[in-house]
Image 1 (cartoon, rainbow, N blue to C red):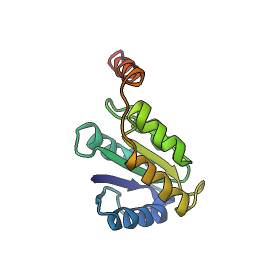
Image 2 (tube, rainbow, N blue to C red):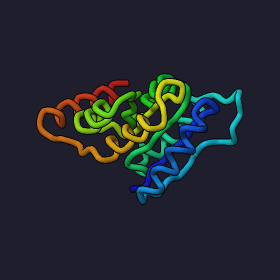
Image 3 (cartoon, rainbow, N blue to C red):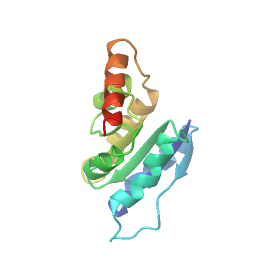
Image 4 (cartoon, helix red, strand yellow):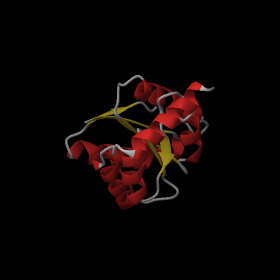
Length: 147
């Protein structure tokens, strides 16, 4: 799987460890992070990653920062992106199965590397479900069109 990854200054260490983990598992990882700058702004960093997801360049993407919250909010402003902050495996799996999450955000200040690896593995291993979930995803897409 080809995965886009990026981080701001607060997620660099977690990004590096997860990129290594993903490559060991055979995934192709594209790092869209800029040069590490303690004054960087996550909306400007997550935007190219989110736009690449919306354009179909990546089926799944990951953004790392201090908490994951701000980048998820920023990424969700882009039509076609379904980003969520995830802090445990169950939510990662559920978010893919139910809402087809395509951009995972996590906070380096919130979780450690082993939990982050488990979350990423659950995220990438989950499959989108149909039925009532498909109907709800369509309703979410309809909300984007009402902007």
